[in-house]
Length: 243
Length: 244
Ligand SMILES: Nc1ncnc2c1ncn2[C@@H]1O[C@H](COP(=O)(O)OP(=O)(O)O)[C@@H](O)[C@H]1O
Ligand SMILES: [Mg+2]
Image (tube, rainbow over all chains, first blue to last red; front, side, top):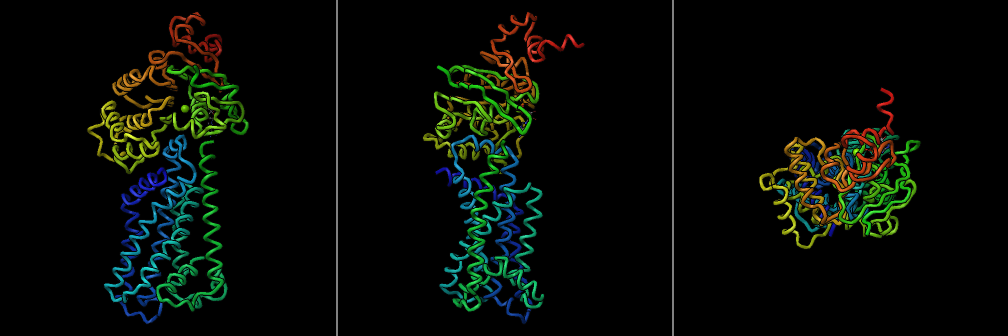
């Protein structure tokens, strides 16, 4: 299978970049650990809430590094050569998405292992949460494909960091959005990150009271739009880069 | 039988005509050199012939298949070593070969890979990551990879660019060993390379295919003493010496 063959190569390329592992795995693990060392009275930092936040935080780096990989592939002659091979657009896109899913799985397993060691109660919900978050990760991967198809390798660093910041500030992982005022609340509602976090937290708690219909709709709109856009833009780029 | 046929093959980039109405027939098993200065349109021609970019107008037939209709079938039987070395940087040489074998869904993967390792003397660098290789070795790997699917038609875009004399001669040997077995289209701006390797030479200038022939024919036609003079005479339309 050409798609799997390509995914294998991408996976190797990704895990051999030490920097990507530091940001995708070590840094989130460190934050997960360190915030439990202080007794912060806010609910956000309780293990059952903060572990999902860390998962989402890790995803923002999945966007950053998938964008970098794709942008690099585009600007080196590597994709040109593959463009003369019998690989089809679907092999490329699915190959990129597939290669990142194992990394997402590794993230999830490690984050939960550490959380359990620090006192998170094990439940079947954890397994369900891992499944759900893998689906959510596809939004972050396709966002990476989209960014990587649009900008140069340098640009991916900038845009990727913006995504990381947006996740930190608009998901509600560090502080409740209410402290920032009305406009900010609206921004959080319009962006998909709060929705993502509430879905992951809701699944882990098996309690969806924080999850509104708007959240689901916002998430679905982003999920579908970004996925479609990434496919369209990547395909366009594959051709126009070589025009 | 012709391996490649083009009719009025043209590529425009906005207003710039990179390739201008080229009619080219290349026989099966022929080693054909496209010779021209920088910007003559060689790479653009290769990109169209290998199905990477679409022509603005004109048609391409590869192995009697129409590029418009059978692009994926055509891509199965050709391969390209692009002008810039194109290998996965974080993979080892071996992994690069295996990856490309996967891309072309090669049946006897191991056997083919070993064959290429031998042909290009890659044993020593097999487990080195591509990004740690010297430019010359990288290019060797890049060219080795382009043979992975036993292509019927092979495009080598400036294969010896940036190689030292020894590496260049070594590569000539490999190319010579392929001669007659597969159709090879090689671009170069080194005259001696075109002259000593190829059966026929097409000279490109400003997007036009100005002349085609064996080096002997071209020398005779231009009434020059050697191939270099013949090339200059053809590429400049005989104007270079007049203007001096
Ligand atoms: N993507 C592109 N966009 C605009 N112009 C291009 C592009 N690619 C090539 N050209 C122009 O087309 C001409 C032929 O280029 P090329 O085929 O690369 O020449 P060669 O390979 O013979 O050096 C040059 O003038 C080059 O600047
Ligand atoms: Mg060129």
